[in-house]
Image (cartoon, rainbow, N blue to C red; front, side, top):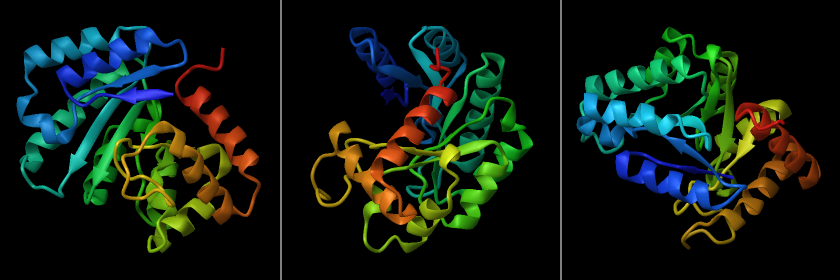
Length: 224
């Protein structure tokens, strides 16, 4: 299991939790909503945090056009800079993409992201976007959104996602899957997300569980 940070304070909390539990790892980075506060000092701190052996990826990084509170050029600069850091440190990335499909795809393609790969976090697009991101060398991670009744495009994307390119996640405390939608999310509820994916792929949940476990270990370098 990996706990994800989004700024200096939350990155540090994620690292502290990872140190307490053997089976908990950390993903640290700067979320696009915090990009205005990212400067040289914060970058130096991030690079130091990334040296922690419990860190398995750089994230949650990317672009967010939903709130429109951080200028797009600032988000892109910080996103690209963190991709460069990830490549220098040979770490995959965890990508936040909210209403920014075109720009996220363009940036990942420009940056030759296949050199390190990573995760499209909480994917909520259609099957065409799923294929485009996979072609760049990414894997697609499904949150509770895949269990919602009205997210038909996400259902179809999950059905078509290759088994070696798929993950499930919580995005806790948000996006709690059915039948607990509306409650605070927690890791235990990822079972319901996994079952939704299995239902759309018409396979036993154990098949998805084994695949996502293997994919997680491969992507995060935990196979040994």
